[in-house]
Amino acid sequence: MGEEGFAETQQAAQVDEKESQDQVAQDSTEQWLDQDYDFKQLHRGQVVEGVIVHLDSTEILVDVGSKSEGVIYQREIDRMGDEGLAEFHIGDSILVYVLTPEDKNGNIALSITRAQAERDWREAERIFESGEIFEGSVAGFNKGGLIVRMGKVRGFVPASQISPGDRSTEPSELVGETMRLKVIEIDRSRNRLILSERAAMREWRRQHKEKLLAELQEGDERKGEVISLCDFGAFVDLGGADGLIHLSELSWRRVSHPSEVVSVGDEVEVYVLNVDRERKRIGLSLKRLQSDPWSRVNEMYQIGQLVEGTVTKLVKFGAFARISGDDIEGLIHISELSDEHIEHPKEVVQEDQVVTLRIIRIDQERRRIGLSIKRVTSADYVDVDWQQDLEDEEEPYQDQEDDVENDDLDMEACQPDLEDEGE
Image (cartoon, rainbow, N blue to C red; front, top):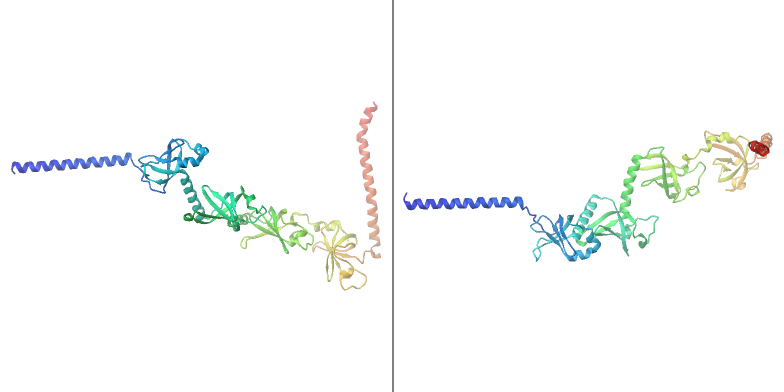
């Protein structure tokens, strides 16, 4: 190889070495930049977390991990007001919305308000997808319904979606009230967020009914509110689930309609008779928490005794009457109404009429008591009546004797004091 060829080879080697050194330097520089300056690539609409590094009444600078700080401009700060601005401090971590990664001044334009709205829209979407129930406060109203805010997002409750209740239905009087709500429609492109109290209450009651059905046991005692009456009983709200008090379980006495015992809105304590989890029904009783008058019927009454009673119901075969001062009801058979032949009890008595009756039969086990009007003056009961009159006459004298004995005891208790005074 000549000198000229050797020089060319040496020159080429030097060029290759230089290019290799430049590539190594470039790779090292890029690696160094990647390690120490891992800038975030921001895009419009992104919500990121940053730290406030500067704050005054004209701008807020936020470090968002990019090549320069983001700027919240004075226009948004003015909308915050002094109170809003006072909530932020240097060093605070905040969420910001990227309005533009680079504005005409080369700055990253940010917004706190838009970040809060974006976060609230995302939360509304999450609640909608999950079907959750949430609580919201009524912020205002218009002709169509109520306005409820979810953070920075305005939700609307149409009048048809407001649950009826015992509160006022005047929209202006509902402002400030807290409601259980459910998101039933969401459309961000139209800034539309529709809420429903009716749907929320249905779901809330369903959840609580399932919980109550799982918890309730026969024999439990619960408090509730009477919410409706019907011919066969009264419905009671137990706090999320309704139970039925059948007509026969309202009282130990005969009841023709629930209104004779309870009214809508009454708070009552009830006994759980049965729980049908499969059919989701709860049977309740009011009378089981009261003493059973039939348990002491043999102690209170005897055959042949005279009592006063009120006629409660007329039927073809006789009349039912309730003994005064008690919930025990007996039957006056049509043959016991009069010595004369009659076709119907109304020929002798009327409902609500107070009459004197003779007890002619007692069947505690079957809860039946036989009564008679025609035997009230029967000579067959002269001895019984005389004994009863004698006992009735003795009662006032016994009361007087008890009073005298009590007076004597009082005098004896005072005697030492009188003796002391004499000394």
